[in-house]
Image (cartoon, rainbow, N blue to C red; front, side, top):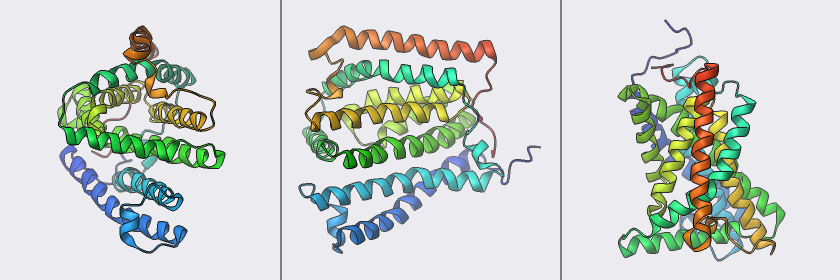
Length: 307
């Protein structure tokens, strides 16, 4: 018997409770976000915070506040709540074990090298025929992203780095890898199937259709990094590097330093061979991490505690 288990939760109930807590967190933190946004901007018109005007400074501030509360409510809150409910050692439940320096450095290099490959796949994904309304949604989302992230203010850059880099890296990895992936692996009795299902949900929940395939592949990378390294710190770091680099490049673009968006590096219109080469070398680095796990008998990520 595992004395760390507070409440035994079956994989089916684990998935159900995780999604239930996501819905609860979304509603709770939506209202908290509206209150904080209204207090900060001085505007108590609820509709202005649910659909703020991105063309104004207050509107962009409201969007940032709502985004940070949304990430916290949908991902961090459910993961922490379930961990404390299910285990007497919630940090162990969530995979906060000692991470190998070798794994951290290799995974960071992997993410940087993988960027042109991901951009190549994103470019090909964007060529898949989809309804016009999907294109319009994507264009609106892209325009809003640039309004939020392209800046020459260092203070706004730091805030964006926290909003887009730190919070999602922590929250999404806790929710998808530490919790959902664990339950799906146990439910399907297969690490590969569990990681695929989790990655599909990870990509779908972002609601960006033209980037579905590259985000799914990123989810697969994060999932295997967690499984093979045995520590949630590794995919968290890699997730932060991926998002943080995009925020940094937008800041450099806004400051007039960089003439190109990071999303264009590796596209066929730029350097096709760079994109293909990055996929090959990234695969090699993933293989090295897997080989190190086998050679040094690294303890894989937990898949049963609290079940």
